[in-house]
Length: 110
Length: 112
Image (tube, rainbow over all chains, first blue to last red; front, side, top):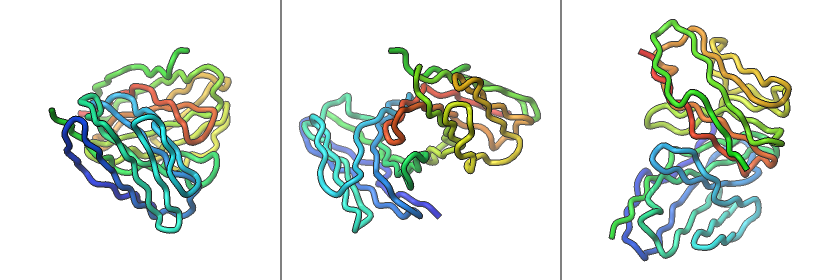
C-alpha cells in the first residue's frame, strides 16, 4: 500500500522555527510536494522537491532525502497566519495524481 | 486569473438520492483532478482527466460515482445513489504541471 506519515499536531510561538517531517512508503516515487490548508479551505501549493536537498521559498523551505524516503517542511519566523494544516504529498510517477498524508495541524500562539 | 471554482459549496441529501458536483478549472489547464477528504482522514485521489480523457480513475470507490469532463473544460462528478459513507469534502484541482495543483474550495457533501 501507499503511506505517508507526518505528525498530527505541532505547536509553536510567533517568531519561532518549526519543522514538519514526512516519511513515505510508496510504490514508486517521483517527487514530494507540500500544501497548506486554512480552516477547511482550498489546499494551496507551497513547494516541491524532486531531487535531494533543500528548496527555499521565502520563510518556507522544504527538504528531501530520497534514500531515506524522508522530507520536511521548515517554517521560519512563524506568524499567527501560519496556523493551518500542512500536507505532504507524493507523485509516484510523472503526470500522476498526488497521494496525501493525513496532515499536520500547526498552531501558532503569541 | 480566476481560480478553480466548485458548485455547490454545500449539499445535504438523503441516502439513495443523486447529487452532481461541478468543477470549473483554471482556463488552459489540461489536467483536472478530483479528490475527497472524509472527516479526519487524508485527502484521497478519485480520478484524473487530461483534457476530456480519463487518465486515471483508479481512486473511484465504486460504480456509483461517475465523472465527466465536457470538451476538456468543466467537469461533473455524479454520485448515484448516495450512501452515508460518501459524506465528505470533494475537492477539484487543475494544473499544467502534475505537482503544482490549484485546488478549488471544495464541496461539502452530507448524506443523511
